[in-house]
Length: 478
Image 1: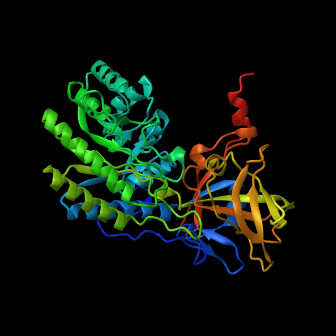
Image 2: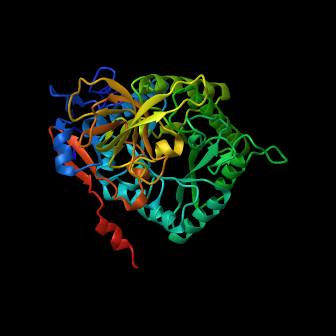
Image 3: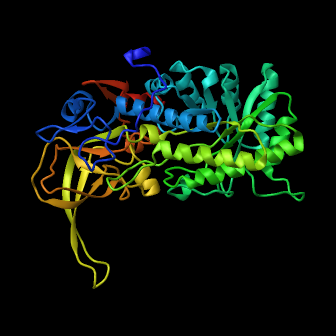
C-alpha cells in the first residue's frame, strides 16, 4: 500500500470513469450519486454535509475519480507504446490544479509532475515528488526559478527561447552542474477550443518555430537545438511540443508528432545527435456538458503510438522515449464547485428583431462567480449546473447562473435548464470544474478564494483551506 492507505500503482488496466449522478450526467465525478431525496453525494458524502462543514463556494474533488483517471492515462499510453517498442512517461500538468495532496496522488499513481513556475515546483517538492520526476516549464523563467530547479535536481527544464538557453547554461555553470533540457517548439499544428489556448501557431509567446526558416533554410527550432548541443553546460534530452487545450480531435497530436520527429531527424543529420525523448504535450479534451464526448485515452494512445512508429520507420530513425502531459483530463471531471443560491430574478428578454420572440430567462445568482471560475468570462467556456440539495418536480425553465461580482460578464453558466422553484438557500453544483477553477482564482471585489475539499470513502477533508478577510488584510500594509 502507498501512503494514505491507497494501493500503489500497478500494471493492471483501469477504465476511464464515465461519470456518476444521472445516466446522462457524463461531466459529474464517477462516485457522484443522487440519494432518494434528490441530494447529490460525492465520494459518499452528501453536498448538504459538505456545505455545512466547509461552507460555500467550495471546490470538491472526488479523490477516487482523480486516481482512476491518472491510472487510466498511464496504463493506456504505457500499453500502446509498449506495442510499438517505445517507452512513455505520463506527467500530470500541475497548472490545471496543484496542491500538495493532488501532487502526491499523481505520484502515487505512477505519474510524474509538470510545473510551470517556482511556486508549482515548490508545491510538488513539498508533496515529496522526487526532483527527477518533475519538469519545469515557462516562457519567462526567473533566475531564481531556474536555480531552484537545478538545486532540486529536476528531471528536465523545458527551455523556450534562444536567450533562455544561454541563461540556463550560465546558471548551470555557476552551480557546477549540467542542466537537463528539452526545447519547446511550435509545430504550426493548431488545436484547441479558443485562440488563447491554441499554443502551436507561430504568432504567440511559446517556443520556437519549426516551420519558419532563416535565409539558409534553418528553422529557429533547429538552430536552437544546435546551440544547445554546443553548450557543455546543457544536456539535450529532447524536443517538446504542445498544440493546445481542450482538444477533441486526436489527429492534431499525430500531425504534431510527425513534425517533431522530422525535426529530430534533421538534427541528427546535421550534428549526429539523436535526441532520446519527445514530449507531445497535453490538451486532452473532457466533457463539460452532458452532450459532450471526451477523448478516451486508450484509442488516442493507440493511434498516436502507431503514427509515431510509422514516421520513425519512414525516417529510418530509432524510436525515442515519449512523454505526455494530461492535466485537465485527469482533474477536470473529478471536481465540482458547490454554491449556495442567493437572488433569483426572472428577466424578460426582448427579441432583437420583429421576427424574434420575447422570452424570459431566470437569473440565478450564487455566492461565488468569476473569482472562482474565470473561464466562462475569459473564454466563453460552457459548463453544466444542477440543483443538488433536493429534488424538484417543478417545471423546467431556461436559466443563467451568475456570480456576485460587479461585472455584467460575471457568468458561471451561460445557459442551463433548472427547476422553476429554485430559490435562495438551495445548493447548486457546477460540474467538471476540477481544472483551472482554483488555479486561476482571484480575489476580485475582495472575495476570498474557496477551499479545496477532497471527498472519499464517506468522509471529507480540507486540502487547501478557505481564505479569510484577515488573510487579505494581512497582505495590505496600509
